[in-house]
Length: 264
Ligand code: AMP
Image (cartoon, rainbow, N blue to C red; front, top):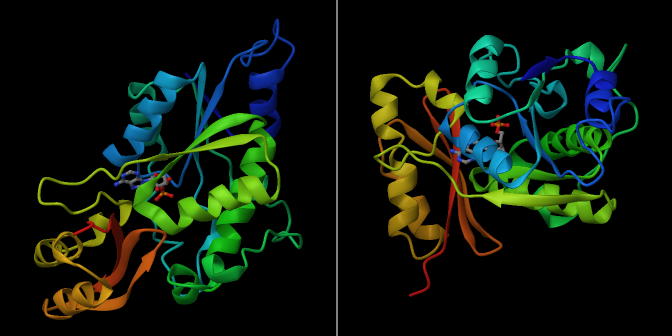
């Protein structure tokens, strides 16, 4: 497995001068974009890409464009050595871990992708202004760097998955977006790099999200259950494309989750 930090290296590895590049004449490239701090949720995406594709590229990049000014960009967990080892064990062929300067040389980009409509402005879009524009911009760059590929995204970030699907279709990227099921702890808490911010007490309280989603018939049920949990503060609960979506603060940590609405 190779670790790359330059955009040109990725292009060269996939398409370069070697007989026909890693992509080969008909090879399928699998792309797994992440912000690192890899856990079993990420690894499930990498394993699936490795099983379904000829070449698997894992990107590790904490994208400043998708963080708000008061969010956790600077303290977001970073451990590239551990990520490289985990990605390799899950079957990755390439890890692309660019610096911010490599992705956004000199300054922030003045040309960005804007996510409009309800999808861009509801729920996460309302709570985190600019977040999806930042996500769509970096994912568009990754699609442009990788070229034709299958790109694996988690259902854990349901609204993001819908945004990325629209990004691919609205801007005609030659990319097949593949949604993958949410990986959970035994007690239902969705795996997240941010779970490591939780104290033991907060970790116990955080299970309320999954409990609320599994027992709810509508967003009001989710709201009531979450609101009743001490130390947990609801941001929103709603319905998005057949799924109950929820966001809440557990202490200083903001968690999101979603589940298909059970049809009674
Ligand atoms: P992140 O590093 O948080 O940007 O996540 C990178 C990718 O992994 C995204 O497509 C996420 O939806 C996905 N992901 C994160 N957590 C999980 C999980 N618990 N189960 C499945 N996929 C996940």
